Length: 145
Image (tube, rainbow, N blue to C red; front, top):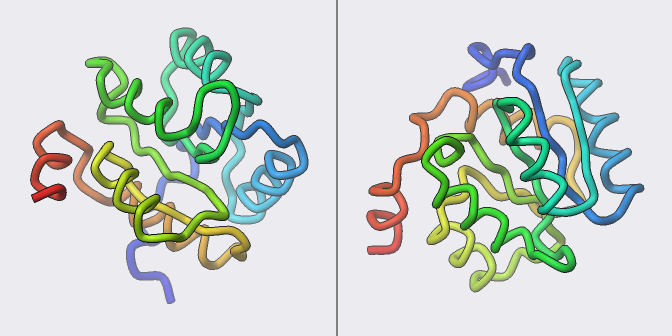
């Protein structure tokens, strides 16, 4: 099934942010299987923000439970930054509870993926994000209502 994936641009640059190297390595492998080639990764939000100041990325994928800055705090920083706020942001986490999902949605997450997942699921989630309307601050307030 290729709904939402047809228009996915595999030239999109992807920034992976996770404090656990094996997860970054696994995500990179899955992204390469899908066809992405421009992939950078980092272990924390501060390093990710430094990379985002150096160049634009078309997609951010971040773990929720990181230290010292959580993925949720990182997402809020992205959405508060005028230059970065429209960047698609997928939260990758082992936490699928309603409270975590709601907090991420309220903060403006573009999509949410719960570990473990496979290449097909990741491709579907990324396709939905890359073909969707870019984030705007009004979207978060509408989804919270």
